[in-house]
Length: 392
Ligand SMILES: NC(=O)C1=CN([C@@H]2O[C@H](COP(=O)(O)OP(=O)(O)OC[C@H]3O[C@@H](n4cnc5c(N)ncnc54)[C@H](OP(=O)(O)O)[C@@H]3O)[C@@H](O)[C@H]2O)C=CC1
Ligand SMILES: CC(=O)[C@@H](O)[C@H](O)COP(=O)(O)O
Ligand SMILES: [Mn+2]
Image 1 (cartoon, helix red, strand yellow):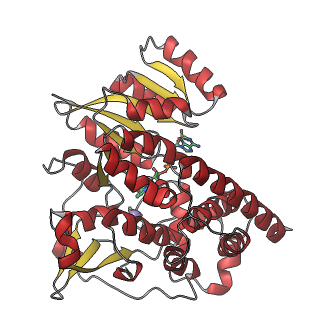
Image 2: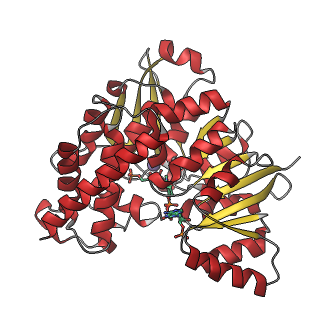
């Protein structure tokens, strides 16, 4: 039987890489549904190649355009509208696995739908888990879903950990998340005020969407990944460490009680963790090139400078505060990054917006999706206000 796959966010960097891996294994996988927000022509081309039953668009205008083009091309794909349709294609009885590759907290509701429906959930959309936290993990447990990390660092940790999670507390001392340090690692701090979106998005090793690229430049990506790791592997905040490794050949490491360390290595190519998640526990070809150790030479490591990357440490502070704090931090950061990308906020003011929002919103622990979304909305308002004051 082929595995039937829904891809939430098929037109993004992770979505396109996922389809690349699927196309290499037509005997194993079948595309059931795809979704996008704005890239109509790319979604149309994907529908023509993979013939999904459903395509979901996030706005009426884009959906109308796609509907015309599907019809003009004689394609049978049924077009639906988000947000309800995203949950439907994530939880549909005929779906085996869901690739969560939407960017941002907007991916939380369909991820929860997939978890509650007991799907194999391939999670790239880290913001969904950062915001959902305990609620997300409960939905996975209670729904009987299988949660497989796609974020490269978390896939690495997952591959290094013993198979039986029951044994982790006795065996695991800590995990080491590797970080590239982003495109501005060596940048003179005096120049940070003038950084442009193009400079911030020029990641040294990966070609990714603009939001995660800016997060990598501020190291807020690593802050989100610390929170993501806490939930995926049920760790205490002090068990999660970060080390800068600019080449990103080691994708992360697990340190055991006896001081032994296991690391996962490979060329920086997201098709590796994607193929790993799609086939686990089997292994399938990903299309990535093999590591050439003699060409590689040396591997470098350094500590993250707390002054240069102040956002990184917000992750541990957040994990030691009320659970909803992570939703507030994530919402503030989404607003600040969007403001920076649209030219309304300076790069070095992203952290200021995050801090101002955390100061403004009283943390509590939401116990439902509705409560989380309400906290997310309050935080977005506060962050817009803070960004407006800084821009003035
Ligand atoms: N790229 C990477 O290498 C990695 C990414 N991740 C995580 O994976 C997720 C996706 O990242 P990436 O692929 O880079 O992002 P992209 O920006 O490249 O793609 C995002 C996808 O989500 C869709 N989308 C955007 N906004 C909405 C919305 N409001 N409602 C519904 N769909 C929406 C986009 O549609 P459209 O394109 O049509 O506008 C696109 O399909 C992020 O959470 C990121 O942190 C994690 C590790 C590595
Ligand atoms: C590929 C991936 O998982 C990204 O999260 C990427 O590794 C960015 O890493 P940095 O944030 O360390 O630059
Ligand atoms: Mn990552």
